[in-house]
Length: 430
Image 1 (cartoon, one colour):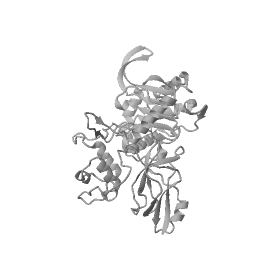
Image 2 (cartoon, one colour):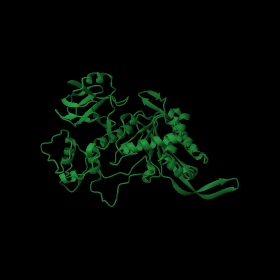
Image 3 (cartoon, one colour):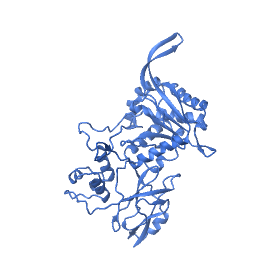
Image 4 (spheres, rainbow, N blue to C red):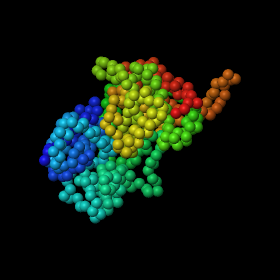
């Protein structure tokens, strides 16, 4: 027998510790390779920690709610593989599998009081405890479609069931959207109080987002600049090529990567918008890493990051936008996917808003909100005089940190984004 040490893996440059939120395995339980042993939480993402070996769990080194540092041993797994010790010393830590949507999960996993459903299907202690806490009957549990090995119900399966519970079957959830940055919000789980009002328990991620927003307002001096952009050329260009692009690439070309390109290229000309503040020092970022604020189905928010966005062509940006948005919706983001953003873009137009005043994503100094594209009457200037015509227009709302970005820079930046978009080449290929 050999003893394998399951360590807390590195989860990004700015993440040094994590809190143990639940154990998915108990002492004496069998563990297969790549199976999650426990769940952890950082200030950025919730994750499962998988084992790199198969064996038996013989020691749990941390209790629920204890904080572990990167590199700490979380558990000891006894394995028959005599080379396990050697594996441990040479194998690189696996990245945890992020879980974004987290309902109320008991801090202690106990199964004695939970009856197995009559279908004889295997249910993990975590799934059974979630079912018990959320009041899911054995019959309901047996009818949940499992996506795990051998059709097992995973934590994500039961979370998705809880999020959609009670919805009318005649109104299916929207699976796809032409715009992928934001998704419609689904109802949260409700704990009914004994009084006349309902009590909704905030999720852990909801609490973190709330704190992050309040901290940002208390840190940065927020100020906004607004511009209206004529995107008729872009609208007509995309309308002409989108079907061919979809057939060729197998995925849609949305407006989001077009706006991301405009922002990334403009940041190259305005490097003082691509900074962060550390005490009395300004940190000038060498990479342009664009965050795309993404609303999740449970109403929470996450910001996956497109690294070196200015180095990607439009096709590459489209691939990255679609990939990150799809993985965000399906809770498949890796910790590195949400690290090191230098500027953020949020699409408030997805929900019909024509403009917004977004809160800066710390420690960045700027965030751009994309309003809804509308057909409006507008004055068209020509060499023969002015005319009234129908144009596709939208508002860009730029929030920036007035501690280090003055009104001139903030206004010039968003004006430059506008000029980039209005100068779009309608003969461009992608």
